[in-house]
Length: 336
Image 1 (tube, rainbow, N blue to C red):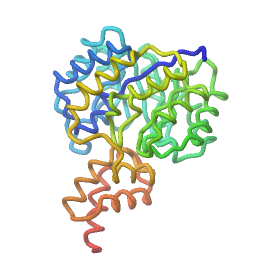
Image 2: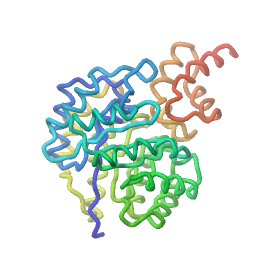
Image 3: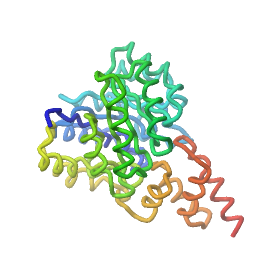
Image 4: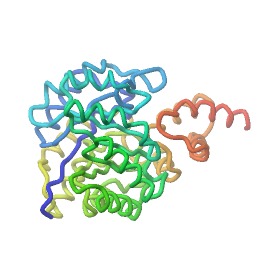
């Protein structure tokens, strides 16, 4: 394979979910240095829910948005720094400030059927000269054909890369193959294709490899899989597989292994693993960041959090609707 795969590290963004957005400035600096030294091409750093996400709704981060971004920029000597923006949570002012603070990659995320809401934000990012990415979340919740139509919208708005995002870790390899191949074969050849996986069904690395085989050249990963639910594609595992397969990339295997083992794992408040709750996320197709919310609500109301997640799936909840969880827990408790 002649293509070089670019790795977008999400330890400092998706990983925020797994630590309740409580990375300290010192931890952000240290993680940035080791991720940068390992060879990651892009380091994404914001609140788990992106720019503007620090709130009562999603949880307050330990550090300010400015501190998170500036600290990452100051410590990344080679990698570009990315920010995530979900229209409605973040606004254009947030994007402009992030750019002023040194972020050079903008990833604009919408639900997989709602690309329309990203037009202004993608356009502004492109206008600012940022590496502009469209991020289609919960991609299992629509057909491959419809995902392509949404991707074309993002491309038309100015996105130079479009991602199929498995936010729930619910896609199997065939599902990834269908979606990524359609994107690669039908978007402009200058438009790059990316994949973001979660490991709720233990398929994150396999799905990432399938995405690469179908033409994706940007892959998201995190140290030790640090991220929502059962975590993201683990960088050190992905790099080992890519090396075995002879797929070209910029990361150093030993450095990613050491960073995951010596730095990331000791920071985890709750092991990022496939347990009964994260497996339920993948099985039912629920947004991965709902895990800790459901776990807390289950304890508070004395109900099984798996029942909460199953009901949330039946209701068709999408990212940003974490406030539904308490209501569902109350209803389940009342019906006991």
